[in-house]
Length: 292
View 1 (spheres, rainbow, N blue to C red):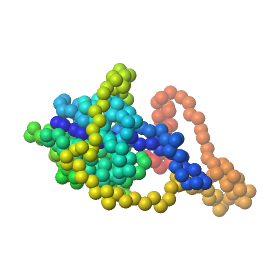
View 2 (cartoon, helix red, strand yellow; view 1 turned 120 degrees about the vertical axis):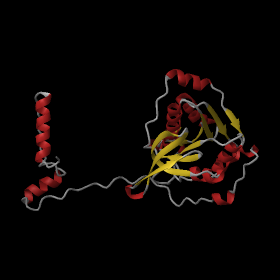
View 3 (tube, rainbow, N blue to C red; view 1 turned 90 degrees about the vertical axis):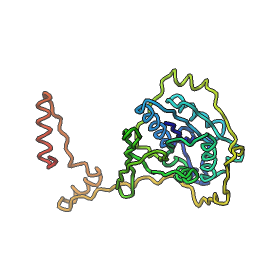
């Protein structure tokens, strides 16, 4: 079982700052890290490899020299091989050209991987384009928005039970067999923390770098990459909720409700006793409030 994982270095959302006057993003404040959805995709690939007891995980990224940090993280987490693609002109590439470069690299091997994992979207552009475009370039079936993944053996073949997220809170369950491309949502799992020896070994590792323009099957349609930024702004804060006071109260009490934010009538009670007494009291409270 050969598994490939496509990774991206992206800015931490908490480090993004937009100047309120100029509207420009302060890129010098960015803290670059492994994209959250990509980390979950890598964790899913590693868990699948461990469950099967055989196979290899290949981590691939396209980016400048500083993006090697995400590959070293992948190596520390348990990836078997890592590789970086880069060309100076790639700084201006859009998601379709990036997907074409990744597809050309995967086609350079004698055979395609059995499974390809990608993050559903990145924390910076969040277009969700690279994964589906990569599947289209490779001619593979795909499942997007994966939030649940189970692997089973069926007559000696791998069978995947996949749960994907749909609009309006709906879910879809599918059965799939390799070869397949999956885009993973960041709620799929909790990525592992590598050990210190694994981190130190990853720091000493040599990373192979390839020029995507030298790949024989690389072909990009740069005309399809036109993107227009209409506006950049900071996230809007959540609206403040103003509680509406009870109309049956007196004017004085209603003013008190507004000033205290609706907390004046809330009550708190400390219950002490043995675990059995506390359990009985909790059950009684839930029954009084109609929860059980």
